[in-house]
Image 1 (cartoon, rainbow, N blue to C red):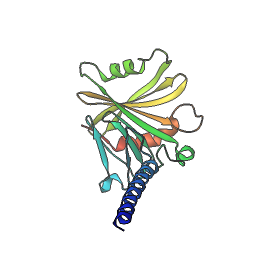
Image 2: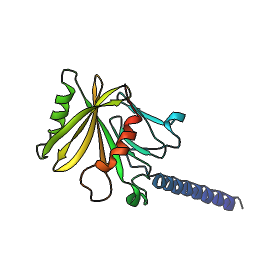
Image 3: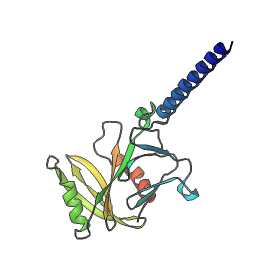
Image 4: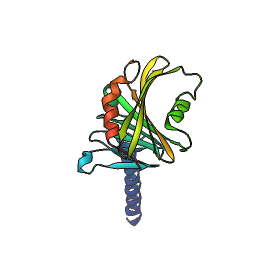
Length: 197
């Protein structure tokens, strides 16, 4: 009798461990966490104390309904008003993604020269600048660059502090659309929630 009770206890314990493992895998898939990324959904607006993420010299308050993947302190990808990349609804729904990458920067180089050198760094790309203008970013001033990259109309935003340059690049996720003009509203929202320190 004792042997039978002991066997039942071991079987129950193994079943509980297996069920727990299945639950964790399910939650991982359901939440759409990409390996190496932290998945950060937002449920409230910035004005009411939104969830924030931070990295090297920046803080980003996640707008309501947006999802953010933070691969490191130097790279984030934000998806406005839609599901994360691993969701089955994502493929049909998402229009835009805003990526921000952080680079080292020295004040001995002007912002305009840094941008020009950075954009032209890949000799395989045909780059034509059409315009640039200052944009206000919380904590500082950035520059909006507009032009053609391999004949696609592109808008990129750059911000700087004493040690870092921030490249903010919108892109159209779905559809065969040339350039990123359709993401201008998402870009404006992203910028309004970004603080450079």
